[in-house]
Length: 149
Image (cartoon, rainbow, N blue to C red; front, side, top):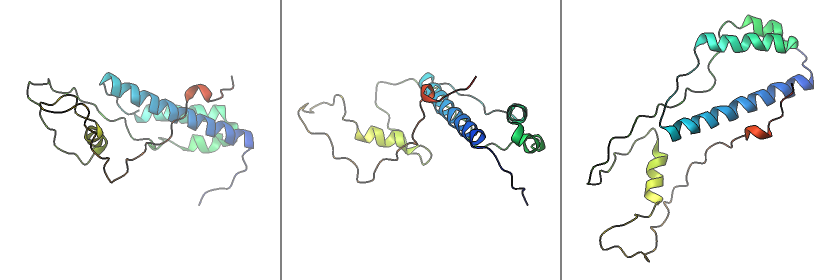
């Protein structure tokens, strides 16, 4: 059974701001990796342990608890690996649908074809699918996060 501790409002605010900042950086870096068509590895046990050791020195109120954590659990999934797309051929190849990332497939369905033989540019776009799109979680803008130095 865990112990109840009293933590100051400032400490909770600092921890929440740090969490928000790390989350924002995670999504910013994930987005940059997708644009660059690159991948990254998840932090290993030693890297996560270094972060919790730093918390013990930065927040003396929770130092005893932080020191009791040997290797912190992974709370954010590792960034998705992005493979280099195959070279495009002359004929259009239809990708097979995937259950892991259906959002790009839905996006392709919503886009109007750029040029098709016999297509009239004044045609209306196809109707939107009946299923609503999945909205990504709201992002925190790193420049709006307050840092105390």
